[in-house]
Amino acid sequence: MAGKEISPELSGKPESSSNGEILANRKVEIRFGTAERDYRELARLFTQRSALPHLSGVCPDRLSDEEREFIDRRYPGLPIMAATPADVRKYYRMNEGLVLIVAEESNDRKKLLGSVTVQTGNVGVLAANISRLVVDEEKRGRGVGRRLIRAANAYIFGSLGFHQANASIILGVPGDEIPQRIFRSEQYVSQNEQSRRCVSWDPDKNFFVVRNVLPMVLERNTYLRRYRNRESIERQMPVDNQR
Picture 1 (cartoon, rainbow, N blue to C red):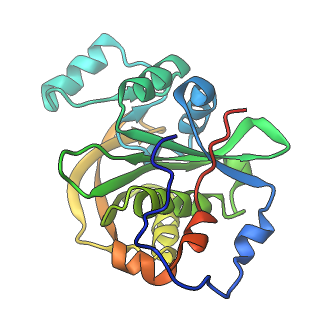
Picture 2: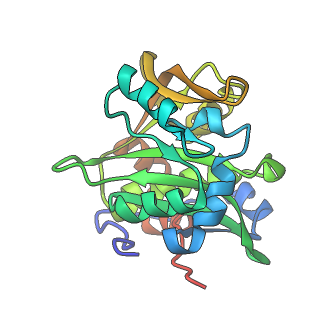
Picture 3: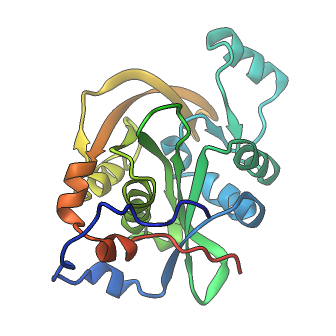
């Protein structure tokens, strides 16, 4: 994975406090993902009933022609991703501005614990978007989501040297307070709620529902006040593990 070097402007003494969460989860590895290696597990994570409402524009299977036509009439050209293995693989292969970060246990690399996506590539923009944070339903409560966000932040501010990280939390879905809590714990600041900003899947209605979102922002200066040096950022960085 290119761009993993830490920005040369970072300096200073290492932080003195230890990260208890990382020690408690030392068997969990955070690495850069790839479409070829991880598409089946990504599809499994994305299609979890509890995860789908939190993922904008993701449906559990391909829409019928009638369903696609209905969406096109209401929202012409709205991008939708079916979370089938083939479609997930194609989506991440075709979109070069997407950087995938995944979590797995070191003694069980066949199953992902979670994933998050960093979107870059906007011409001339020194900001990145964090999206599709998802954790295996059976592995929640272990701090996996927080570690994925820390890894994404390290990549955005440490490797890319960007000035801002953005995230949008879908509101009005079960558990929407959980991602808000995770991002706030990493010093993201809430912005004004935006009404009717996206669609996400409703497993009960078996179709998309229009949702409000809560934008959240982390500025580079805020991040560097917490992680002041190369060593502390390097500890959060995803590894390049292609085994």
